[in-house]
Length: 271
Image 1 (cartoon, rainbow, N blue to C red):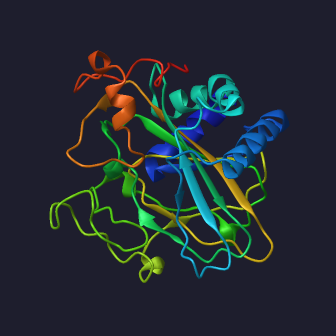
Image 2: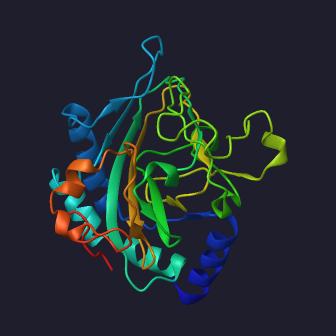
């Protein structure tokens, strides 16, 4: 990534809250991630969730915080140049690991991932952060993650559970209600792209995003990497976060100080 390109991408990231990165993942890394994802699907962790309904002809499974359990993910997280890219996009001098997220939608899955922001689900606060959405399969634009440009500037919107639409994290009325983005699609700039293995999407944790099901015979296997910059600090919540980080945060309580950056084995410095 040249300096001119980096500045262009940084400007786009700051303006839209999301940017596509072309050919930033090597073929070797794609192979490594593919093996890790397939291992997760074959043997999900206790944190895994099935996010599709029983009558869905496909299948949607998610798993969280698996990078320390799978050597493939450990290799990728510690060696990928995405941490350097995150530093360039955010203007941060350091980048730390937050968590990983595996998302797999099998062919024919109808379940849509509804519009949401990630930040309200997390126990961190700040502005210098990046989520990377990394597919290991080709993704057509109609099946791609969609992001609403500019929503990273706020406000925080009410997070609701994906299947029953209940506000399980915040009391009703405590945050701005999520607009009906789907019926107002023409009123917003919605970003999505055709992606090949090696491409990735980088987006801010407050950027509103969602994803369709997968059409035809396509399979969509994705590894998502969430990283934190200089100003991101621990902000314990009075609700269960997603992923549920309570066990991680209590593993070394003396390292979990409100208002300070996260440190320790779970949150290594990547850049």
